[in-house]
Length: 287
Image (cartoon, rainbow, N blue to C red; front, side, top):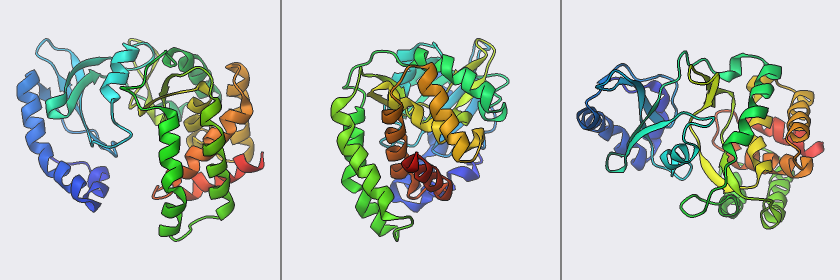
């Protein structure tokens, strides 16, 4: 079985190397566990092995084996919690194999290719369906995640060679300190809901995939959309996404802006998209 080139970056750590070396055995075990017929892996996954599969009864599915990390924890549980309402359905989960089966989106066209106006129409109607009441534990809280980012942000920035100005570090840390204690109602959040994580499907026109679940206030849920450069690059485009979504969803614009700034800075170091993320964070800081 060919391992997608996009997963090669995981070889940089011992844990990643061990996980990659176990994949062929895991896939064989999954095929036996669920009596699957499988195709070639999807090439675009960066932190998971995803493979089109067909169940014994002819149902089309996707076998997913995620690299175990902080962000992917409880992904299958989040899909179960949504129960197909705005997101792909969880068909089965096997924690012992570190794998699960999900509904396959056909044709699977990503929302990133439809243009900003239509994409925001879709996301404005999709987000309230995903924002279901949820408890932590088992899900990790936004408060805990903000504390985690804050505890290592400056050190990580220094270790990376200070790849952007310190004022962004200071602004992100200020937001991570001030926002968590004054949050609104906690709901289940998809903290990586960018344009490639919403796919065209048959059961519904569009379905979310690949949650990195947290429990926290709704304003945080706009962060991945506001910084989604695939919907349009530029200060005015970032502002447009922020203004439109906060208005249509009746959310606090200032809190959404600061959450997006903080997460974007925290996620930027080590990202392949660092220049664009820092550009976006700078615009958000100046708004």
